[in-house]
Image 1 (tube, helix red, strand yellow):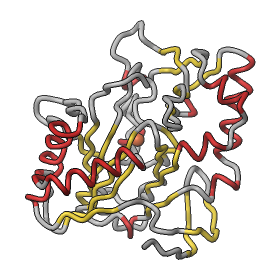
Image 2: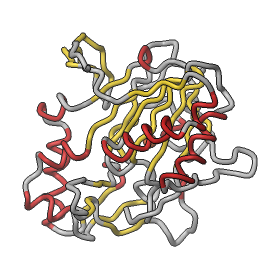
Image 3: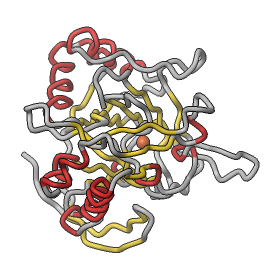
Length: 291
Ligand SMILES: [Fe+2]
């Protein structure tokens, strides 16, 4: 049974420092894995798939050391084999599916660096929002927790966000009237500097809202798109949405914790990182549907 509790938390997200009372129930479903072979248990994998398909998010607490991510590797293969999940995107021949997220201090000699590679605040976004087909799911495993009390990871249910939008805004966000710039560090061709897309995916009949979002690279192309985008931005920073935010400070991100989520159903963001040794490992699914 979930119990409500609250505490005061210093936040530097997204881009401002506030001291406020946050209602912080353990709102995200969590499953523990007692041993590496849990990833081979049909029941265990089924529970995780249930959470990913119903809530769109799940935390998995590993009760054993696994800095090589062998459990996560096995789990992904089982989700693919028995539950229709995609096999992840291979980052490189050497790193395979996994990508090490180790934010580094600013280096003026590097012209373009992904924001996830810096120590800066990373405001609300969905991953790869500038790609024609962003990944459906991604997971992060904590390898080395933040020892400085920084690097709060935050998530926000997109269904809740969309429920506060007017029907007019929802309709406009579903139109192909948004130019999304490809950040220079992710540009694959010189002539592929942006894509033109809808931000909100049409309701699939299940009442699940799916969004792509990264505020700083989106340009509305029509007056209606502009008004809808402004409403989306206003709603995102409104006090009613603050009560929907779920914050995981470093104390709630222990070594061995995995957070897996539907990249189209949850926004995520990160506060400033002060610990240069903070280390997460990320894996993203290959897209298997539009948006
Ligand atoms: Fe991200």
